[in-house]
Length: 54
Image 1 (cartoon, helix red, strand yellow):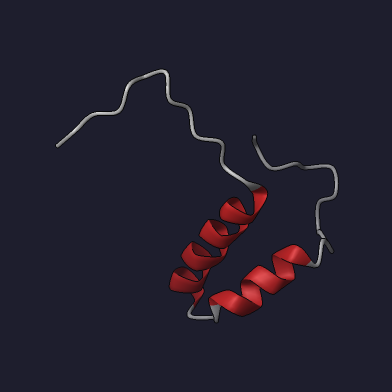
Image 2 (image 1 turned 180 degrees about the vertical axis):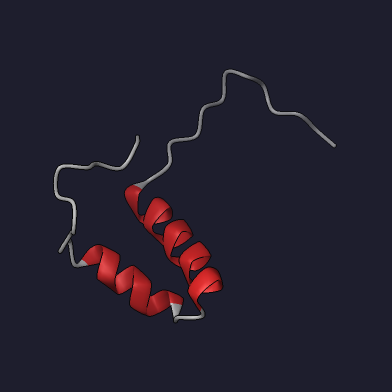
């Protein structure tokens, strides 16, 4: 196994976060991940004051 140097920092995009949240929610709820991802992209949020961590 090769380790990466500590200086390499990967930037995670908002789309990657959405896809990850959608897939884990789909596993837990049994709902389609595409539907959950579309709902996340719609930007109709229950708590508009909360932001995703970056």
